[in-house]
View 1 (cartoon, helix red, strand yellow):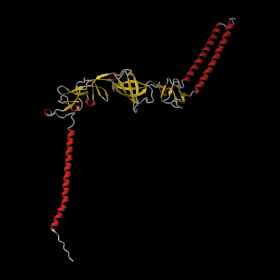
View 2: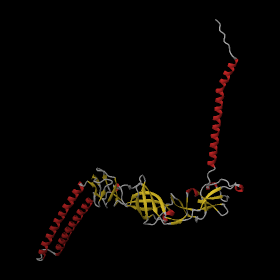
View 3: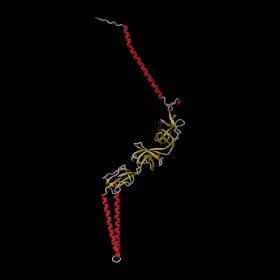
View 4: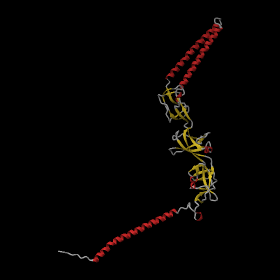
Length: 394
């Protein structure tokens, strides 16, 4: 059986229109999103322009006829009374370091009863040296005294008998003189033997190595069994009384402003603990290469202070009246430190200065400024002397 389907042209046209409606809606949504994106971009550009134009510290160009004159920030620092302070570094050391070595004949070390870090008193034995041979020599020397004394007693008895016989004429005066000389020689030999015994005992006493003063043992360079002699060098190092000091290296100019008795604060490297010190001596010479001198600052003993360690120090110096500037305002070249100031004609002028102490608050200008000048604070490296500028006071 055959079936025929009739297609109505009107229905076909309606279906085509219905199919195009989603595509038109999609185009409208796409255009809407495009406008939204453009609006966001325009808003961002406007905000960025406002942010860039919002700073009013320095204006790159002035309006009108001054459009080519750069603006710079200036400051009149004035002058204030400042407590002088000198910051330096140095090495910790024993204030009075005593090297101790073998004094006597030396020999083999039997025992070492002390170690580095121990406190010792004056005369305390640091190392014992074998004295078996020297003890026998001492005994032999003591026996020599007995021998000499016996000879002296015999010579005296012979002289006493001769004196009794001379009165009877049996012995001449010459014999008496001879016997007297013999007696005197025997007595002298007794004195010699006693002196030799004393010398031997003194030498034996020097065999032991003892502390010449009370203090802290810093180093020990000897062990039992070692053979030592006066040429062995320092076997021990003692800090007398445990006193320490900091050898602060200070510039030639700053050294003159440090007085003996000045108080400072020492901070060893690797720690935050601080110690008070007092300058007790200044070096009478200055190093020709570094142009620095040494200030010796006395410290009380503390386990955190180790000789040979590195430390920083802040020393109080004389009070000064001077301007203070931020680091950005100070420039330097081969001619030295300088700043740029703006004169009454709004022209840049170079002014040489001498820099003083440096702190977190700024750098003190020791000389070259009165404090009333208009000093360029920033971007001085981009200016040239004689250039016209428009100063903006901070």
